Image (cartoon, rainbow, N blue to C red; front, side, top):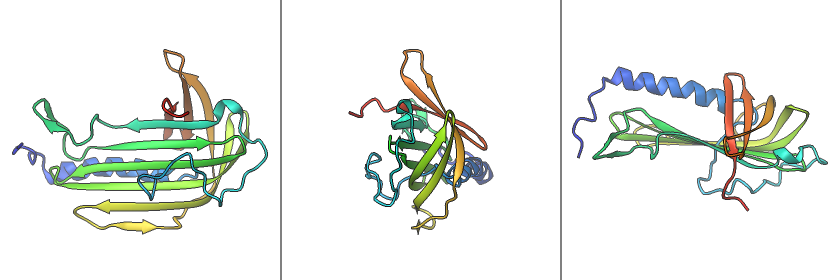
Length: 199
């Protein structure tokens, strides 16, 4: 057991959480950002309240795109060291279908108070997307948010407030030629890779 986990003052832990919180809020608050209210939900499944439109998405953009921003594995503590207090992980999935529907799922986890408390957040948003060339308009039909906290308040919002947004989508490739999707947000870009395990 690691007894040195509480070596950071509470103020530093709070600052780390405050640094992650604006990123999560900014990304969740933009149409087209989110995470899941059902942790085992299938991101490929499209809710019925997202009506399809005729061929609004270029074929190169369709499919499931994923990103995981984290230490691997999160909350690791063992013989080779520990993940510092206040660190967490964000998993992001974006599904774009050829008929103009999208689903954006975000999952956020963080540890705080010396690794004694854990917080998870989930955002699940679906709707329609349309655009030309690189600029696309995301029009959400439904969004939900769930937060669990072992040392704080649990929350569930359904529906969660969400607004339409515009994003630039650009296809890139990694060094091995695997497709990447760069998506712009007001506070920066997020790069996702095409799902490697999807059929």
